[in-house]
Length: 328
Image 1: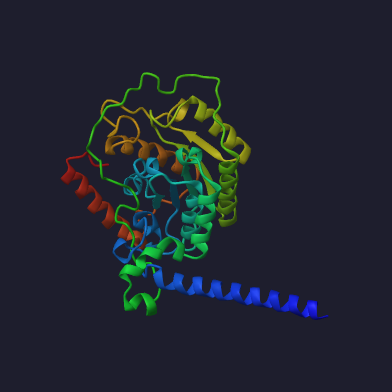
Image 2 (image 1 turned 30 degrees about the vertical axis):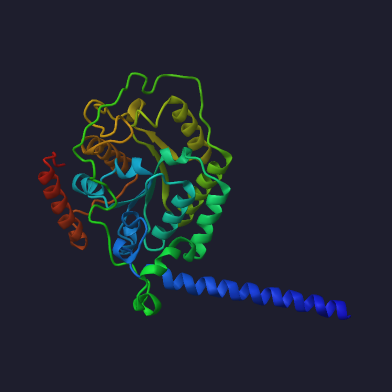
């Protein structure tokens, strides 16, 4: 009987310690969490997280992925040409575990009709340890924002966590808009029987992204943007097979009927890895036609509730004009 009592006390003691640790993690997470979704408040990847500052249920298309996405999809051009509201939640070297985090955050405030996942990140290797740390950081943000202790203010202890900011470019990047570094496209998309398959770990995350989209009533669409560095026929075949198994639409802009004709001598800024603005404009136009033609997404250009998009589009055109770039 005494052994049972001692065992029960140990269990209760362990539970009490676990509860105290969880409470401490939750409290410290609340303190170090940025109190607004801007860089100056400490927000990591502010542009991608700017979607949290968009008015609720106003984003019809959500773009996800790595730098291929934020270099290729221009939401304001898409607005100007199609009247479609969209946002690019893309980050450099994005892994699928972070894709799920960004998607979950966006779905808290938005109900997109379509979620476009640029496929380069689907092949990026991931480790179980990094995925576990991402999950832990989502649960307890102190693991992601622990360095903020150096800059904490009174507001961090007593102020609310909110999101009032949205990126004026809606996640698109103009960093290298007019730069040119030609690509060698001599072996680009050469035919092969090889198939590059997804790793088991990446496949599980892709299935989870599909499940999240289904639960939110959004269509998951896979898009491969043009790149002589990152894309080839082996990846195309692997992605086509994966899309078929997931039962989702797949558009490869590197080949076939949906190919976007990129001038690799002038429409890449880093020798074929990413597109510059001229290349991105071609891709955005092509994707806009796909979205308009296949997914019955509303044109909001005449809706007064979306006048802010017209204002942002005017600023975007002015910015392109200042860069000496062609407006679209």
